[in-house]
Amino acid sequence: MNPPESYLHISIANQQLSLIKNGKQEKLYPVSTAKNGAGEEMGSECTPTGWHKIRVKIGDGQPINSVFIGRRLTGEIYMPELSIKYPQRDWVLSRILWLGGLEPKKNRYGKVDSTWRYIYIHGCPDQLMQGRPESHGCIRMNNADVIELFNRVDVGLRVLIDV
Image (cartoon, rainbow, N blue to C red; front, side, top):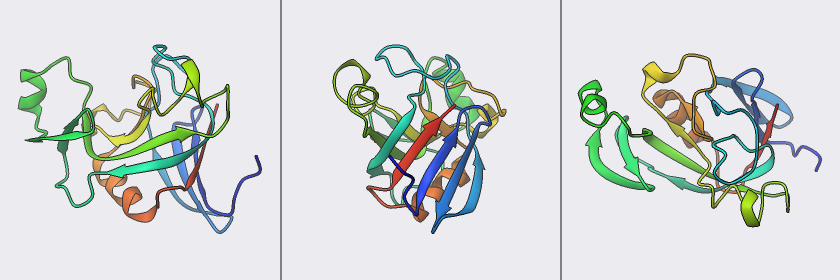
């Protein structure tokens, strides 16, 4: 698949997300991809590669650091005290861009389907953004950055994730 004029490019090697508009890099954001590296298999806790699209945007208008579980607001606002109370949570904060794979047998359908693996671009506690791969498969961002990105992209925008 050839790159469209506008898309997101996520580099696992560089831990960066580029917003490409009209063929030019408009913005560059730091991200954190999977601690387990790249991979598509369900249960692997790896970040899937290949072409995706933003299938759903969740959290429009919510306060920064709003907490989501199962794509639903909990009513909580993340603070360090909350992480002490719930140390096992994989924090999904502020906004969610839920990805859907576009490449059958690579990241779409069956045991490699990115949608059913619940692969998102989402906010996380800012102190977890250390420039290293540390997620469980998703693409984590600083909260202010994910809100800015959320406001700049539309459902259907293509996303390329590569190593």
